[in-house]
Image 1 (cartoon, rainbow over the protein chains, first blue to last red):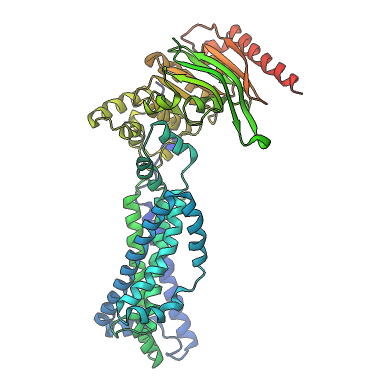
Image 2 (cartoon, each protein chain N blue to C red):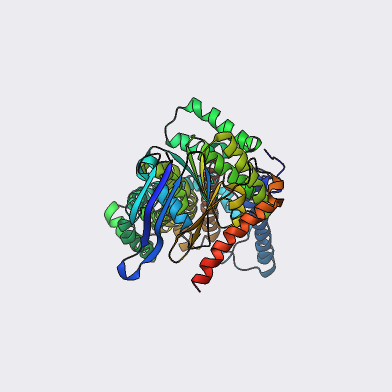
Length: 268
Length: 258
């Protein structure tokens, strides 16, 4: 049989092309922004407590690096805990809800509406409920991660094309087979989009929840204390540590996505 | 005994006061090993008829038998393979994994998979693309993979719903020849839906001409062109005569409805 068909459309892009677009390009922009910041501070000379130069922030970081990284890790573990609980429950509820169209029609609008609820405003209440320790932060982060994950997952599970389902029916596939071999793979890109949003959400949630109270060895508490006594370079150094953890978390999810979805095609 | 029979079939969508008659009074019988085309304009119910035979929809009245069973029993017995207009390959599976999907669903023993899949990919000329993902294939290759998938579990019947409708003219003509080759090798009974008169005449031993509003069979044209059909078949005068016969039927129906 003929094999002469054009291979024009059969060329795969280089396997690691996503490295250059997703990591290298943003990194270049990041370095340029730091240099611009340094130049502007050098030129306008604002008081250091208003805006320190990047090299001053770096000095603050270097002087206190091991503590800051330890604080960052503490806060990150809260964020991670909340992420796992919130995203995990979001996935489970979505799978239960998507099983029954009626449930989905009731719950998805509620979940979407809850996106406009400022969940962080409940942080003081969470402290009343769960105490001043990490549990209250994990609870807030979990609630913040739950809704986007659930909504995206339900959408993903229900976005199968009618023919893709009809194909399964033509093989007399069971409901469970249709779920595991069609609906879940179809939903994966939606789920990972939610996870990526939740990495940022979880770091924000943990830090801001700490502003309302917590132990001194957490980033949010440290940032608030240092800013209150106008040692802003220290606060900035802690913010940078938070950024680093946030970015590492995001990249870890992106890598997991590429491992679990090797077929995924980057939009070029 | 015919392998597929359709008796006084009708399909009505919607409720009494807002209903659409998709098919009315359709009767048809297809012998084992035949290649029959259903041709007609959009809305004539040709795809609906195919989906009713496949038990992907249920008839309003009338009866269908497939392999002497109801369509539902035939579907559960995996008596047919279905090829959709869109290739409907699963994006997350390579060509091999797509073609073995039905074997996996049906719980066939794993040692059987490789042998069947390899044979099917050889037949459609995709062996060297076995580890490609669907998006890395051209439209024609995707549809070949989809045909290989429909045949991987060796069903007796192949139901094809405008499988080459989205392909360009040149690819479509080559796919027609390849389908005839597959038919010759496998002796499947093929029911082929198309809106191309030339395609229906070129492929089949009988052309079932259908007309819309309401969808029904207007005529059945016997195609006496000898097999194997080749590129030259398309240039024969009999080929054009038969195309004209089909076209005339559709024209009469068209005028009747003006």
